[in-house]
Every structure is written in C-alpha cells, then in structure tokens.
Image 1 (spheres, helix red, strand yellow):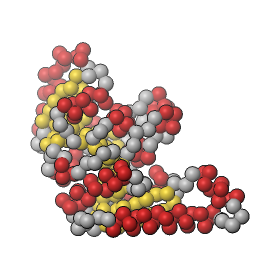
Image 2 (cartoon, rainbow, N blue to C red):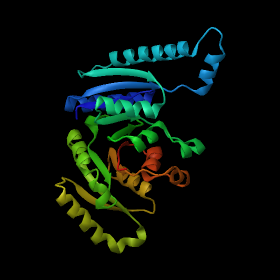
Image 3 (cartoon, one colour):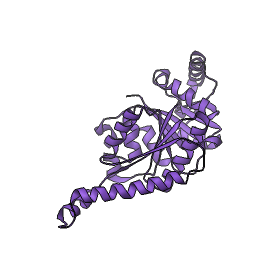
Length: 276
C-alpha cells in the first residue's frame, strides 16, 4: 500500500477517518491524500446567479478558497511524521472522487460515515454508500473514534467461496497491515443447523486453499447483517470486512444490500471491496 485517500467534509467522523489513515500510513509509509470535494447545492448556485454583484465563478472561487484554508489547517494539526498531500475541488462528489482515485493510483479510501434513512437513502444513499458501490479499491468507513493500531480482530463475512475468492487477497493484505486476527463468519439460518459440519468443512478448505491464518465460525440468525454485527459485538471485533456486489437501482429501492444495512447500523469500522 503506497497511497491512502482520506475524503473529508471536515466533520468529526472525517477526523476519525484521518486518524485511522495516519495510523496505517505509519505502518506502511504510504502517502496520505487529504481531499475535499465541495458539492454545491442547487439553491446556492441559484442565489449566485440571482445576485447582481456576484457571479457563479466568484461564488465557486469563494467556496474553494474557504475549503483550501480548512484543508491547510487540518494538515497542520497532524502531529504524526507522515507524508501528506492535499487537494480541493468543486463538483459532483462521486465523479470527482472516482477520478481522483484513478489519477492518483489510490490503494485504499478511508472516510467518515453517518447513517442515512428515508427516501433519499433508498434512492441515492449516503456519500459512503455511493463510493462503496463504485470504487475499484477497498473503502474503509469510520463513524466513531477508531485507531488502526487498536484493531485486534477482523470479522470477514463469508458467503461462499466464489464471492470470497474475489476479495480474499485484499483481506489478507488488510490483516497483515493491521497485524490483526481474522475470523471468517458464515451467517446461517437457525432452521439449517443440520448443515453445520458441511459449511464449516467448506470454510476450512477455503482457508487452506488461500493460505489464510484465520479462524472460521458460524453465527445463527435470520438476518445476515444482524448476524455479522452480533458476532462482531459478542467476540470483541473491531472491524467488519465485506465483499460487496453491485445492486441495480430497482434492487436498492426494494431492499438494501447487506453491506448498506451494516453501514447504517454498525458501531465498528467497515472495510468493503466492490466485486462488480
């Protein structure tokens, strides 16, 4: 890992994300890119157009200037001896973020998150949800004070070898970078306890095939998201790792994915990688 992107909106959660990324950087000697994307509300642009003494260009320049000053202050507050770089622009958050990830060769994104609800969440989701759905690199989201140096146990949601195989090498890299224990957890329906030996056997074989230094476990629950959260909570885990499959807009309207349900409920840090 050589380049870590921290997307900041200058919130408390974004500061938690920055602190997490700084810990990782000290271990990997990666450059931390601290980036702010100013998404302008339509009402603000309308006001700029209607004002006789302020052009839209003037308004954009003011927004960007204020953000650049905040970025400068934020980076100056960093006490750790790490390499940082900053970038600020105005535009559509998801488009600008993905472009930066590609252009800068980002290996990992770390960002704060807050829960979202209602029709807005159903249709477009939070910034974290949108980036999780689109980024080709792993994304870690943070919503509480979490230091990478304190991560002792990672829970990886295992839902079959085919899907897990797409992300397992990156999960191994995550485990190595955090020097943490790894547990593969399969959430099974309580009515299917007779399948326990078969499932555990497949998980053990998967670990052997991929040379994983990990444990395997079953959690019985009717909800995959609740099962993973309950297991993590009961076993003192600090981070949940998930392989995320893209849903269509219609699928998201009727039912959120497991990762998005967990995103809104979890007190833990969440690592996701989009599998397409």
